[in-house]
Image (cartoon, rainbow, N blue to C red; front, side):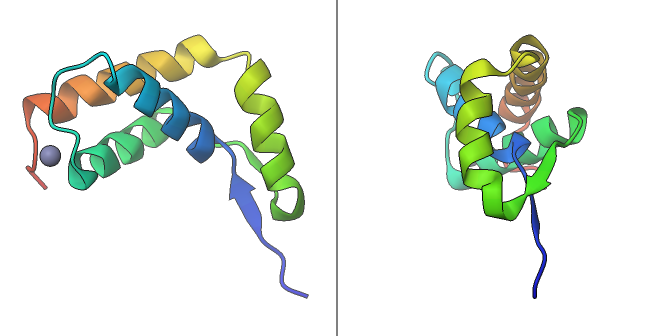
Length: 89
Ligand SMILES: [Zn+2]
């Protein structure tokens, strides 16, 4: 049997990134958003769950997540950094 785990922070960060980007006037191409995602996730502690339950957990957690402020700070920082230097890497 193949065992896999999922980092549910990915889904949460993606959600927050889309929400926060809606209020920012900057490049929102795939490359910039990918850079922002990666940068945000590198600033945050990953949260792994069993993939079999991953879908369920990510839905539960994105609504009741306690560290939303930390996540927003990391995502905001990533948006600022990438939008100041888009398409650099
Ligand atoms: Zn771009």
